Image 1 (cartoon, helix red, strand yellow):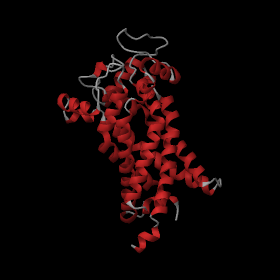
Image 2 (cartoon, rainbow, N blue to C red):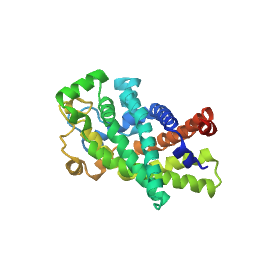
Image 3 (tube, rainbow, N blue to C red):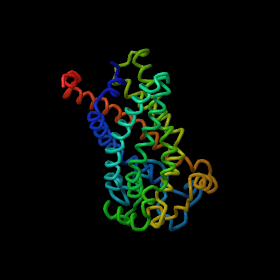
Image 4 (tube, helix red, strand yellow):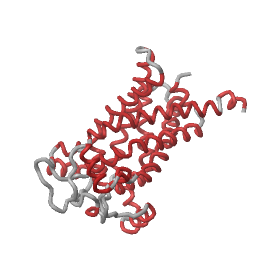
Amino acid sequence: MTKSNEKIDAPKSHVFVSGAVAGLFSRFVISPLDVIKIRLQLQAHGNPSTLPPPPTSGPTYRGILGTARQIVVQEGIRGLWKGNIPAELLYISYGPVQFIALKECTLLMQHGAPWIKEDVRNLIAGSIAGATATMVTYPLDLLRTRFAAQGNERVYPSIMYSLRHIWKHEGVKGFYRGVGAGVVQVTPLTGIFFCTYEFLRTLSISSLNLPEQTSNFLSAGFASTFSKTVVFPFDLVRKRLQVQGPTRQQYVHRNIPLYVGILGTIKDIVKMEGVRGLYKGLTVSLIKAAPLSAVTMWTLEYSLAVCNWIDPPERREVA
């Protein structure tokens, strides 16, 4: 039985636990890079080296190391982990929902449409799984962005306060600002990632004779880098839309423009910041993407192996 089939045949409890462990561990490791990426994405003015921002716009970040240094100096080392609690909750829930949805979609197509080619099946199942997980966990993603965008003057002192404040002043729709961009981003992203990952993993094992764990690590890293580059502008649009609302000018960047809709946001960014404005934070996103996805998939494989060791298939068949 291949590793891919083991994931499909694994009980839901194994998939749920393994997905949660993988998401929790990887989220903590890359949290500083995530905060840096969000700060760069929300920096709405032009090239900071040639176009100085208005005096009330907040800090000007230049590069990954410069941004990290400025955050630590102005906000302390804990500033690099702002938004980590909702982010942990996001990844704990996102991973299990994603992998369970992937399993169910794959099984449904295997039995209901067996004529569909495996690569196409992986693409469809991965896309549906990503869209489902995004919709279910989106409020946590929004909270992660808003907490990471806070400077020393906090908009939300706690998660409970943020929930009450958003509910009172923005309603249910406030928790889903930018969800359309999120779905547009993650649907092809997840599909391309899983399809590329499974293809490269199988190829590297059969043709290059790489050890299985090495193959999983390298395949996940390359697949993530490739897929994230394709859809990155929608990630930036999602971040800009997530901080809209009554608190828009209270974050560390106080000059965030007013945006309406996905296409309107793209149009405004290109007009004010150029096409390059759609790719702010891409470098740190790519640096983050490879270790994040590789660690996630690597941890997932090991967690599933541990679950199967504790509760082997033979015992389940007897039961």
